[in-house]
Length: 448
Image (cartoon, rainbow, N blue to C red; front, side):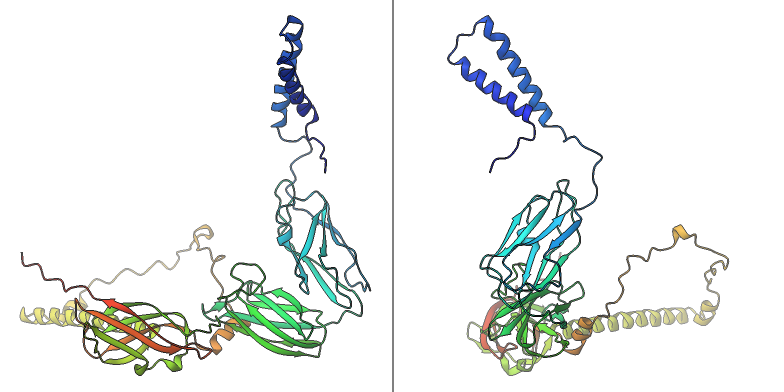
């Protein structure tokens, strides 16, 4: 397709230079030719400089593109519809990433998105299906020529035959493995048996809503779309359910995790203290499979079994360690106070009298007023999340991928161990795997 020159004068001048130079290869450089050639070069330089300047026009436009109209109208029933769905804006938009900004539900294998200067047109490559309710959306990100970006979603709903049902499927999704709400999770409602797939995403609170679904049986799936390709890929966490949809609304929640057909594999082992070994798996494990009998610690090279006292969750071990440190701190303070009292008593000094004569700190002035500009700013303080997804996380225990083996006897410095486990994942897949643990030699105290 031809395109009009943005700076016709400059391009013509540059073309004149090219023609003049080409002519110089064939014509003698006479005084009669010097003037025209030099003039052409000068005009070309002026044109080139002009092309580097900002385009003329009114004041800079700070506003993003504004949607003016959508064709067809939302709510229209259009049997045998075979046209484009068009979104028209109030100014020229860029072609940048417009294909990624368009979603069509139910899903088609390929969607064609055409740029039309002040708008875009959408059409499935295989055409619109008959007797289907469509939801076509343009996501935030439409940009004008001055890089002003729209932050609004524009949606049209129409039917290619039959009325548009007033139905809703609500729910919430949590990333169970990470213990947080699933923002931007992919929702797929697959109508059975014809496999029409209605799609959506969760919001920043992990909530979703699919609207205008025909009644029927759906296989609904929520997945953590890590690469944002709107497809469930291998190793991506998901959860699914069968939903019988026959009313005005339905609610379904999801706890996503990776569905591995192989059991958990040990990825790392390390020493935490003289009698504790950390074991990390590549996926969540079934807590019911975590027993002393499921693990082995063999001292090499003769593979002597080393007794395990108990298996702890890493979070429990860390909590016990924190309690032990706090108890040691309190004991140290009590010991210091007792030693001080003994020293004072040996000197014949009454410790109670010393305490009474201690200088108390001056109380703060009652009339002190903190000026508004000095008061702390609370606008950015996070408000506790009270969404359904947070309640969901509290309903089920957190998933486990790290455990601690507490040994009966201390581990020997400078020794090599083999540590393995035979545990199952949430689907019941069992796998025995392990790693070597090499302990450093004990450091001799410096006697110098």
